[in-house]
Image (cartoon, rainbow, N blue to C red):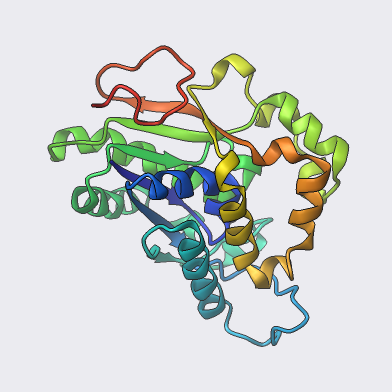
Length: 265
Ligand SMILES: [Zn+2]
């Protein structure tokens, strides 16, 4: 089993599908992560970290720690520059990921896909979880790469999944916590209907891995107490990770499956 996750910033992986990555690594799969940027536009909130630290160096090390916590291979960086959220910084920075040539990103993903030979690829949903432009760019490039792969390599990946939440889940999150980003999410746009899920993965045994990986992103989340609080307030958020289907080669069992590799043999 080869699993490849493709995201935009350090921490995207842990939030979106950290439990799933840990579960497959533990099951003996080869699990890799491609991260398009080094999260240069993040904000240092941890009181013990020098606010003048080089953000790229800091977040590179944090993502390496998160990958260790998940038990997966060290991250592969594409070395684009974080566009920031909102995108005022990215608009002025030609190197920002939002200004990248989409086909160039796709080609670079294809090189890694050819080397890693994943049967299953994971990336963001079409709305990039909460609309971050870099999340949407990597989503588009990953779709492009999944489909081109069939023409340029054999074996080609069999399944592309998008990390996803239901409208109900977004409403439930909004009921227990508040943040500028979360408060502005329209549940019907950013969430999908329950019958849209192609895979629902039980991560109950990997909650500690996911929490440890989230907390590895120290500069962004301080000591990470918020995750413990979140787990206490809404434990169900840490029990399952859900995915919609983004692309398929070959058969797919009746959805939703409880294993991303179900039926692949
Ligand atoms: Zn992100």
